[in-house]
Image 1 (cartoon, one colour):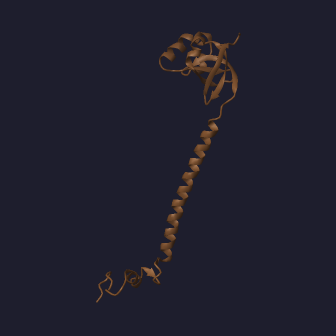
Image 2: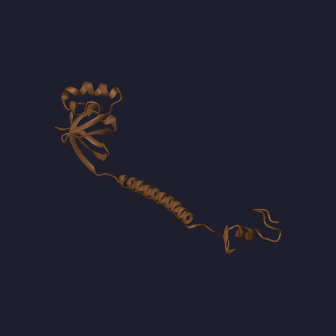
Image 3: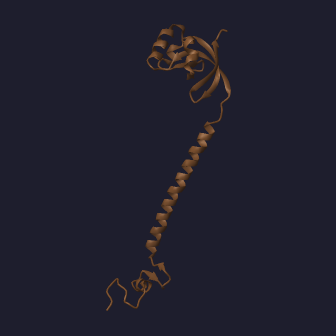
Length: 156
């Protein structure tokens, strides 16, 4: 007499599994119903979609970083040296003391252009003598920061 799940002494484990309906025609292929097959395909499809989505996200981020890494052209701006706190309010000659005080508190020197744009300027040491003055700045733009090559008073 054969116990359920245990092979008879004369049967191999494949024969036992085939007899229990686990293997089809003794080929070693698991027998699954249509619904189980669909679930397996859906699970594989969902994981494949997640994998492809992750790959596209990685490619997108890499392409953005490569596009952003290109060197920008040298350009010239005209405007007032102010600070990031006061911005447009500091585009006059009477703002020098306020700009230096704000920078002492942790703000950064910035260039307020005639187009109404505010750009942080680097290196900060180059603009300390030009606070609240109209200047001509030559440099490269990286985001909202101008990397200064040269700076001079606007009238010179």
